[in-house]
Image (cartoon, rainbow, N blue to C red):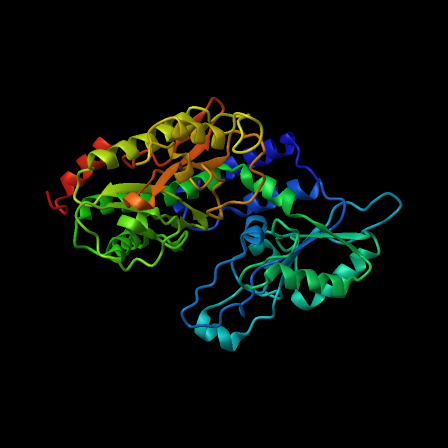
Length: 456
């Protein structure tokens, strides 16, 4: 089930036209034509129906919970209310007939009493529901099982997003077992159907961004850069890690960010060497370096930016040495970003380039190469998820958005350095979408000096 380049280009052109009038409203859902084009592109390459569920309203009943949609479902539907499902049906196979619609959105019956507390929802019986949702047909959720059973008489298989597996092949779905339960429902509803994984085709589409997606990503990135610059101007010894994170979240929310793209990482001293440190309870000390990996989410799309700051506004000689090596590795990797390059796979992939640079520049306290202190990959795709899905050995294409984020983490020296930027792959190379965030040690120190928050 592959998506042809011609279909993708046609969908991108249609989306670009639709987006001209609404870029200023980028916090909100994209035009219905955007989602329709995605479903059309996917349907043209299906040989069986695809069914998909959004998240339910029962996943977190806490009064503190805010509903956010399952990313694959949102990517294909734009529907951001709970308890919905969809089915996309291809043309019937040879010798068979399908007289039903090719795309159906299933919605629960409206609960008018509950809506007094939570606000109005789109219901299957609302006038103009299909037009409002941008689907060919909208039906009550209680029709879903019967429709799938009818489809089974025409197609012997069903696509869905299967539960993820770990490297040993065991199903390993963390948290709410959304895909596991959906898979169980399909098996119970159409026990004779073959269940196929539709994730690779959806993930491949998600890797190449439309103009509308660029607008949302850029807004998330711009607000995240604003927050990082504020952190540079605020940073000083004596503050706590959580205080830096709190100011950054304030900048995000003031600009329209709905939530953080991931748990904020602000690590001082030894904590700077912990990759996903999120406790944020340590006081920042004079002489520390502080790794700040914080990004906001706007319109469902995530930013992912990291900067490393000297707590007192000036890097020590050793901190500056490690910083410049990481920056050099980032620049060497950026220079290789272009269509056809790979994050992983082959010999000269981005990971190899960054690792070779770090291994050939600088030494640890025992005179050994620094490569053993570089303990993660250099890049991942970015989009609706901060680690957007899809094969990392797929050659890069214009329109993909990735991170470039080398790092060195030396616990015995309490020095961790990571520099991470969000990068668009262009026809001829790349564009750093987060380029406003200072990257060189000199520029970081200059911005910190301009803020007045740092003790000099």
